[in-house]
Each structure stands twice: as structure tokens, then as C-alpha cells.
Length: 436
Ligand SMILES: Nc1nc2c(c(=O)[nH]1)N[C@H]1C(S)=C(S)[C@@H](COP(=O)(O)O)O[C@H]1N2
Ligand SMILES: [Mo]
Image: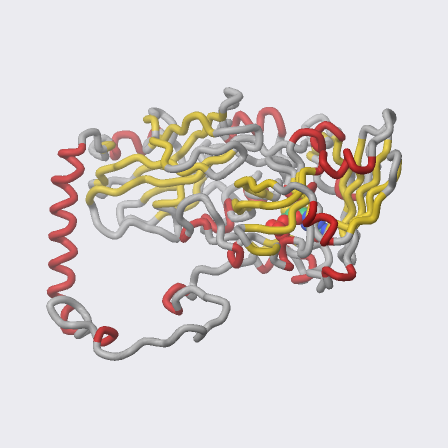
């Protein structure tokens, strides 16, 4: 797609933005806040005729009894939240059994993705697995090959961790120019939840890896039998065989009854519906690490085994789905993450990367997890070029798009973690743009 009409320069916007100021004192914030509330009150008064449910009336739902317990034995969100759903881009794949759906990042709060909104990626659909008939086979270069059932796994010591899972194709449609007019589509191939399961190292202790054993092939029980080669070091570090997410059993979409989970690594390596772990002395060079999940570099060679998801961040409010409706004080909010550890720092620019201000990190700051950041901002209606830049605890700084293209060229699909730009327009709408 052409990027010429959407590409813009930072310079042209600086003059117009001079009066958009980050809010620096609480007093300033509160003062503006009061005016803003007054604005809402006016809107309510004029719109009052629309509904008898607003103050000072007693709302209708206070005048009758509500639905009882077990109306829904498994709870569901309010019907007013029906637009908070996973979505897919029709042209991305021809068939839903080999497709991807994305998380509605624009509507999520905190760092945990609810199970029903976790992004999905399948190569051959969701198998309907009976856990009683499912086994995990561990064999190859081991002293005692094992076939474990789900009860065997449940008897082993378990751990719970909060980590994101990201498809390395996240953002991959935008290497050559901005295409997606929605945060859900520019960044939604990622979700973050609490995972519970058994450390892979515990399982390897049980089977006893032979000294020549250096790699592990993980294979799924789905029709694609999807598989990846995992170095032994990852297994001994923090890899898990998980059976639960956010307190309940894995959803079928996420690999029920068990999946491999490699914190911080390409989602593709976290093999779902896990049925087999084979220990070997070298990688297997299967489809997902040769034809796919490799990056064609400018010199024509392909980069392989690029396991780590590098530091990345994006502003979630405002964004195309969350425009600003009136002038006033807002929180610029967003999400940052790094597959290498904790987020140490996030900067925000409102002038396309010319100047930067530190955002505050809010709530839990965990390794290989979503981290929330925000910066109060007084918007006077002038256009702005909003960006966020994450730095992780290893000192890695999220690159600009041109820095990334200088090294990687334009032929990649995966690992596009460049600084993202939202263009805030005078009407408060937000467009996806790329800066020259
Ligand atoms: N067995 C199996 N495992 C799989 C896949 C698959 O199709 N089959 N897809 C992989 C890819 S490409 C990604 S990005 C993640 C997606 O995990 P999710 O669907 O739980 O979000 O699972 C990985 N594990
Ligand atoms: Mo993926």
C-alpha cells in the first residue's frame, strides 16, 4: 500500500503544537479537571430529555428486581460491552482455521488479558482434546523416557507467572507503510495473563537429559502438528508446561489441556496442545523455523532463531478507537513490554520524537509482562504526533522505524517493534501514520 499520503514530517507540526502542554502540577490538573466536569454537567442538562435514568431521577433499574444467581452459571460481561471482542482482518488469511484474531487492546485495563479476549493463532484450527486421553511424551536423548497423563502433571510442583505472549508477526503488516487504522490491528497480536504449570526443568529432571542433549523439539497435537526447536538453556531457565491461565484451565484456543510456554519468546515457540518433547543434539529445522519465523535481511540472507521479543510499546489512549472528544486534560496511556526482562523507563513525545518526557509506570512492573504507563496532558485542540519509547532493564531502547529499517531492510514480517506514531488531529480523531 502507498504510504505517501499518510507519511508526514515531525517538523511541520511543531509550530502548531507549541500550545499543547504536558501537565506539570497537580494544581493545574485539578483546575482543568473541574472545568471538564462542568462540561459534562452541561452535556447532561441538555441531553436530559433523552432519559429518565439520570440524576436527579431515580433510574429505572433501581425500581425493580434484577436477575438472580445462576442466571449465567459461567459469567459473561455486560451486554453493553458487546463490542469488546477479538477481531480479525479479512485479507490476512483465506481461511479461519489458519488465521489470527487480535486482542482489543484499546478497551483493556491493567495488565491482565481476560481469557475470552486473548488473541488466537492457529495453523489448523482448535482440536477438541479430551484430557483423559491426552498424554505428554518425553523421549530422545534421555535416561528414562516418560509418558505423562494430566494427573501426573498435576502432582508435580507448580508455579504461576504473569507474562505476555506475542506473535512475532505483531505489527508485521506495517513494514512498508501504515495500513491499519486501529490499535487492535497494529498491535493486537499480544496478550498477557497469569500462567500456571510445571517448570520444564522439573520434567527434564524426571527423564534425565543425556550429556549430548542440547535441543528440544516441542510438537502439538493439532492437525498441523506444529513444532519448534527450543535450546536446552531456555528449558533450564524459565520455560513452563502450563495447564491454566488466569486461574482456570487453559482455553481450547490457548492449547487445552497443556501448552509449552516460553516467557518473552516468539509466541510461535509456545507450542499449544503439547503432546511430545523430544531431546536431541541439534535443532530440527522444521517449517516454522525455516520457511516461516525467519527474517529476510537486506543482504538476501535470512535471520533465524530470533527467539526474543524485543522491547516495544504503544499508546492505547488516545488511539484510532479512542479519540478525544473535547479539549482539556487527559492521560496519555499505553502499554510497554520486553521479552528480555522488566520495562525500566518509558518516554512520551507529542511532537513526533523531537522532544521526550518521562511517563510514569503504573501498577505492577514485572519481567516479560505488560507494563502500564501514563502522562497527564492538557490538550488545547492542536494537532500532535504522539509516540512512546520503551527502554528495558537490559538498556535496550525501542528503535525508530528508520533505525529498524536501516538494519533489517523492508523484507521482514516478524519482529517489528519500532516506535509507533499516532497523529492526533484537531477534531480529536487519531490516525495511524509513519514519519519520514
Ligand atoms: N500446536 C500449535 N501451537 C501453536 C500454534 C499452532 O497453530 N499450533 N500457533 C503458534 C503461534 S504462531 C502463536 S503466535 C501462538 C499463539 O498463541 P495463542 O493462540 O494462545 O494466542 O501459539 C503458537 N503455538
Ligand atoms: Mo505467531
